[in-house]
Amino acid sequence: MNVSHIGSALHDLIFKIAGEDRKRFVEIAFYWKKLVGPILAEKAFVHKLEQNVLFIAVNNNVWMQELILRKTYLKKKIFLQLKIELKDIVFFITDDLVSYKPKGF
Image (cartoon, rainbow, N blue to C red; front, side, top):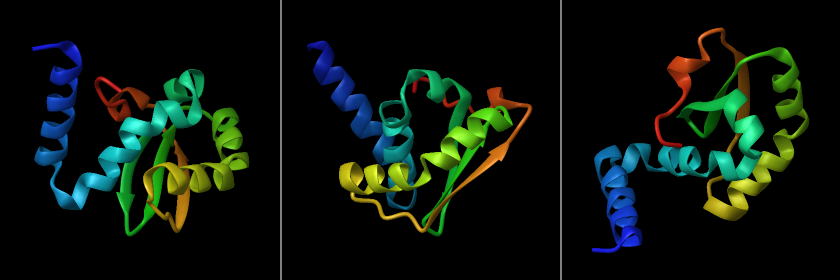
């Protein structure tokens, strides 16, 4: 079994475990680093997706301001790449960013 097949199987398993109701959240979480880049991906994490509103945990106000300036771009890119239309993206600051950091993303 080659590595790409294992990665694909793991990817499929994660989506199966997440279920239909969490599928869009998982898609955005997987895509987050590609969307914002590696530096910003270390400073901000996908927290939840609720009623088509994406909540992003950010470690300080400087990075939050950067994301606010990119909000329209982020919504557009998520729609173009993932076909997920978001009503809004809400950013909030947290001191405990470690608890929001998804493992393996």
